[in-house]
Image (cartoon, rainbow, N blue to C red):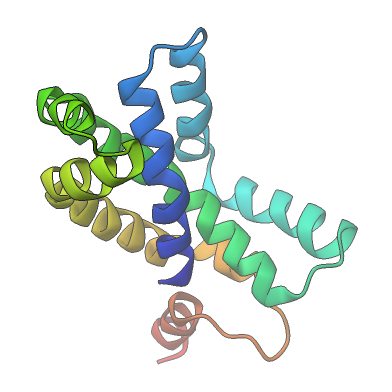
Length: 158
């Protein structure tokens, strides 16, 4: 849940920027954010284990958090981004002309209008992160047991 919330915090502004502003290389950036979804989970888990836990020496919890964050972020950016692309920005522009700051207009106008997309993205990212057993298996260490790996071992031995 914590990794999905952190991915929401990063993914909502990223999807807003990708939907609202036209920058050079926008399609490449979208493809880059979607790349973890096409890579098999076992490759992601092993690579993250080698880099985060062994090379950087981070604690196991931070490695798990980073792994599930990277799994959740593409789904959040894609779903929230598609909600924001369908949003009519005229209300936001009216708020700007009436003296509202960009941040306040984003919080009071954009976020409530895409709240269903944010909720759908949260649920999709959480379920996908929960279902990704290889990342949990590779990144969990001694004394750290994730629920998906516990369920898998319970199904194997009972």
